[in-house]
Image (cartoon, rainbow, N blue to C red; front, side, top):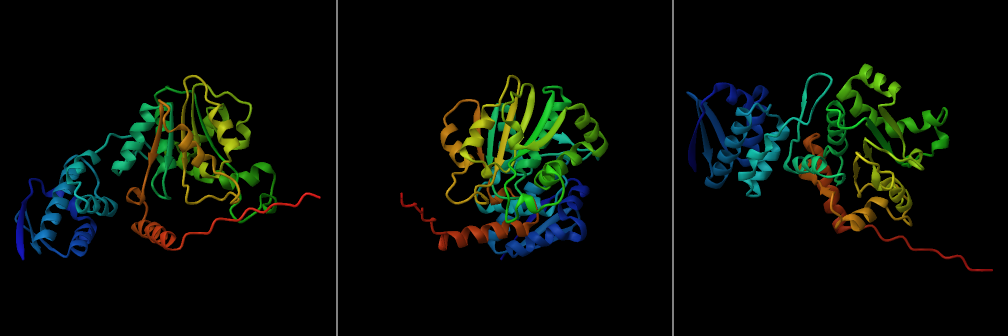
Length: 331
């Protein structure tokens, strides 16, 4: 058993790091098996030597983020603990990122993990960015934030959001209403992100003017999209023909972000995912970036990370059998 003392310059940083009712502190104590006490602007960490050193690095990293104005949440704590455990303590300082966008409520939108930071940087530096990762890694949300930021800065004239209308267990024909009513549920995540960034009234105004367009992927055929920020969401459900069609819509002054989770493909098993194929075909082309986000970049409830990890482990032990191809005998 050893004890380490951490000096603190500003009491508000301790309050920020500890969290409401010391919830962040309890995460550190439970995860590492240490005891942390606060005495006279000093934090005392006691426990097994290795655990105390990791707790010290984690707390100092959180203090550094707090001193830069970051609001420390349970997600921050879990992520920094994972960095410390993997020996990446020196990378914690890079987490205090520039603001990508400010949403309708005045809240700054920032990358919350190193993977997200690389993703946002890639969008800024390249014409086309492909982002692959599990649910909850902020692929769509950050792409929309970058699009709104570019639109506000007048770098582009339009934001175009699209996704394939592929059924996941239900047929479009079973849904009530006309075609627009049928496809709206598939586009709902894109609407939600735009509402958060712009607010319903501003969104409606830009939609009416044609500055914002949200449509199924099939509506993109035959168009050339100049001076636009185009986001293709759920791209794992595109066919190879759809992906090629979409990529050839790019016009002058445009930027494209393609997002998807190749572990959640709803295509028939005999169809090749356009996203999977595009990653292989485009990997060596300049001005096209391919970003891979992982379970460590999940910024939803910590349980989502555990669910993703559990499924990954299960699928490694019990991989799904390849579907056998059937052939019809010629008459």
